[in-house]
Length: 618
Image (cartoon, rainbow, N blue to C red; front, side, top):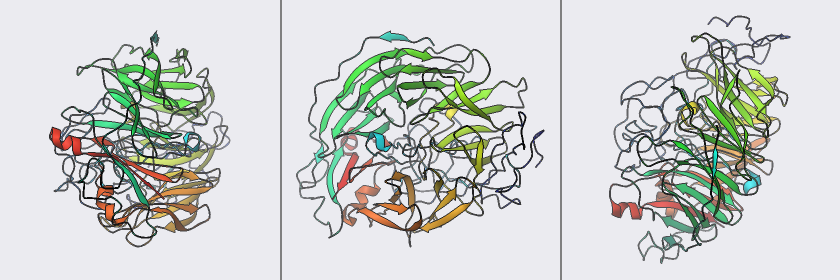
C-alpha cells in the first residue's frame, strides 16, 4: 500500500510484514509532519471479520423494531458500511430487534462499519455505553455497554456484538434556551420484584431463585420484571448507573431509580417524549444530563437536554440545543460529562453546557476543525474533522480540550482519510481509528501532551472490543467500549473466542510505551472472559456463563496469571442469567447487576413478564 504524501512508517514497534486479513493489528494513524522530527505513518488494513460465536442459543423478542434515531439505515442484505458482510445464520439469531431494524444480529449480518458501526466505545478506566445487538450471554455481544468509573460507585456495563480483527499490511498509519425545571414524582415502591424467596413477581410462587444454590455460589438478591407500557417495537435501555444505594436506568419515556439492596423502585422521572441519548457516566456528584426528543412524531429530533440528580430523582434544568441548518445539521446528539461540563455533539455542531445551571459555555468553532464527538471523565477529549478543500481527502484530529472553554490544549492529526471512531481509555489516552473506505483499523496511544506514545502490535491474534452501535457521527457515543481496560502503563484487550460454542479466549496485556504484548492470560477450558475496567489495581472481568453454568465476576492481576473469581453465579439460575436480551452489566460494592439492553415483547402479557434486571451478592 502506498504511503500518504510525507508519511513514513514509524521506526520500531510496527506490525512488520502484511498478515492474514483476519489477524493482527493495523498500524496507527500517523500525525502528519507539521514539522516532524520523524513523520509518523499510516495505519494498516482492516481484515475480514469472522462471525461472532454464540455461547448459547437464545430467542430474541419476536417483534422486529424499526430503526432508531441516529443510526444509518441500510436495506437488508446490503453490505454494511465499511466492512464486508457475513451470511445470515438461521435460527433464533436471524432477526434483531432494536435500532438496527431488520439487520440480523451478531450471528448474521454485521453492523455498519468495520467495528459493528466502528471499533466501539471506550472507557476511561471505567466507562462504557448502551448499545444494541443480539443478546447472547457472550460478553462480546449486545449493546454498547455503560461502564461507570470508581468515582461513581464502580459501575460497569457490557453489551455489544461485533468481531474486530486487527490486521497488519506493513504500513502505518447553539444557542440553547433555558426552560423551567420539572419535578420528579414522589418515590414509589415496586411490586415487580422477586426477592428470591418464592414470593416475588415475575416467577412462579413455587420457584425459589436460591433453592438450587450450591455452597460457594453467589445469592440471587432480586429479579425485576418490566412495568412499562412500551411501544410496539420495544425500547432501548440507557444505563444502568450506580450512585450510592441506587441503581438507575432510562427507558422509553422515563428515568427510574431502584434500591440496590432489594430492587424496589425508589423514584421515577417521567417524560412526554422518548429518552434518546445519555452519557456513559454521570458526574462524580451523581448528576447526569440526558437527551429527550423534542416531539413524538417520526421527525422529532434528539435536541432536548434534561438534568437529573440520580441520588434523589429530582429533575433540574432543561435546555434546547439549536439544530442548525444544512444537510449535515445537528439533529441527534451524543453526550459526555467531564468535570462541571456536559457536551452535546453531532454532525456539524457541538456545544458545552454548565452541569450546574445549563448555561452554554462554548459552541461550535467559527472555523477550522469541527468537533463531532467527545469522550468524558477525568479529561475531555474531542474528535474533530478538519477542512481540506478536497472531498477525496479527509482530515481528522483528536484533541484534549478545556472543559470550560472548549479550546484545544493540544491536537494530534491523523494521516489523511483516517478518522477517530472510539476512545478506549481517556487517561491514559488509547484511541481506535479507522479508514472506512479501505476497511482498515488501528489502535494507538498518545502521551499527556498529545504525542504518539505507541501503536499496538497485535501479531496474529484476533481481537474483539465490544462497542456495538453505529458510526459516532450518526448518534453514537465516542466512548463506551468493553473488552478493554487500561492502567497507567498497560492496555488490556480480550481476544476473540476460539469457537462458536464452548470456546475460550485470552486477555493480552500491551506495554503502552512500546505497543508490544507483555503477557497473556487464559480464561480456561470452555470459558470466555472480557475486561470491564480496573478495580483496585487489577483488571475486572466478566466470565461468560451458559444455559447450565452461571457467569462469574473475576479479577486478573496486572502481572497476569489466572482469573480470581469474586462472585460465581448459581448454575440453578443460569438460564435466567443467559436470557437477558442485549445484556448490560454493573458491579459495585460486591454486587453484580445484569440489565436488559433492550426490552421488547410480542404482546402485552409477554411484556409484563419480561425480566429487566437481576442482582447477585454474597
